[in-house]
Amino acid sequence: MFFQGGMAMAGDLNTLKVATFNVSMEGGNYLAKGQKIPTPGALNTLLQINDNAQICNIAEILQRVRPDIVLLNEFDYIPDPKQGVEAFIKRYLHQPHQGAAAIDYPYYYLAPVNTGEPSPFDLDHDGVASGKGADAWGFGWYPGQYGMVLLSRYPIDSANVRTFQMLKWSAMPGAQRPVDPTTGQYWYNEEQWRALRLSSKSHWDIPVNVNGQWLHILAAHPTPPVFDGPEDRNGHRNHDEIRLWADYLTGGETADYIVDDHGHQRSLPDDVRFVLLGDMNSAPYKTAEQSGAVRQLLDHPRVNGSFEPQSDGGAEYVPGVTAAKYYTASWKERADYVLPSKQGFKVIDGGVFWPTKADPLFRLVANRSASSDHRLVWLTLKITPTAK
Image (cartoon, rainbow, N blue to C red; front, top):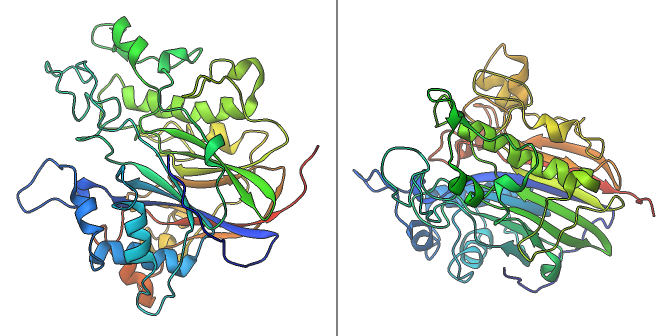
C-alpha cells in the first residue's frame, strides 16, 4: 500500500462528491496490431508520456466531474507509484484538457490484486494448468491486470486500511460452490476449493478523514457473471463477492468468517459512515445473464440505495427502454455503483457522465477507445451526524 502526502483543497466542509469509474486502463485495451494476448507494461509505458488520447479523455472526464474521492477500476496495478498512479496524476490530471482545469489528488491508495496471479490449478477445465487467464486466482493474463486505485482529496488512514485479497471462498458459510451439471460433481475439487480466493481482484475498506469526519470507502470489482459455462462459476463468484460486503455490513455471527489479510476478524461497526464503490458487474434485476446479486447491497438495511444516478446520454443510447437512463456501461446495464450508508449522509445530487450525441463532450464517450465501455458515476453527499 502507498500513501502520498499533501493538503486537500478547500471546499464546503459538509459536502463531498464521491465517484466510481471503470477506466479500461488495462493491457487488453492497448493491444498492438495483431496482438491477441495482453502483456504487462503497456500502461506503465503510456503513463511516462502525457499525450495518449484515451488517457487524456479519462483525465478530462475526471476534471469535468471533479470528484473529491474516486475509485478507478481496471487501472493496472503498477507496484512503483512513481511509474503508475503518481505518473497519471502528474502527467495527465495536472494538465488541463480541452478547457477543463487541472485537478490534484494528494492522497491515493493501491495494493496488489488477484487478477493474473498464477494458481497451480486447471481452474477452467481445459486440460492445462497455465497459471494465466482463467487459471489465475482472478482472471487476468499477468499479475495486476484489471487492478484498481483510489484517489482522494482527503487524507487516507493507510495504517488502518483492511484488505481481503486472500480470504478463501470456502470460508463463507453457504457459499455458492459451482457444480458441473454434466457430471453432477463440484466444479472445483476439494483441494482447489480450499485454496481458491473469493475476491477476483480484492476488497478494500479504506478509512478517509474529511475535515475531521471519518468515512470508510468499501471498494471492489467483482468478476463478471459471464464468460464461463453452464456451471456458472463466474456468476456464483460474482454473487458471493457482493455478498462479502453485505455480510461485512450485517456483522455479528453472519460476519464471523470474514478475516482480513492481517488476520483480524472484525466487521464494520454500526456507527460509521461508509460508501460502497465499484464496478459490481451486476444489474439490479434478473436477466438471462444477471442474477440481480447487487440487490444484496441495494436492499441492505444500512445502505441508501434509493437514489439512482442517471443520464440523458444513456436514455438516448437505448431509446424506448425506461431503465436505459440508469445504464452505466455501453453493454446496456447498470453495473457501477456509489452506495452511501443511510447513517451519516444525505444524498444531495448525483449522475452518470454520459453526454448526448448533440453535446460537445460526447467525444469523450463516443466509443471504448475514446475512454471506456463504462461511465463515471457520482453522488454529492452531505455529511450528517452518526449515532454514538
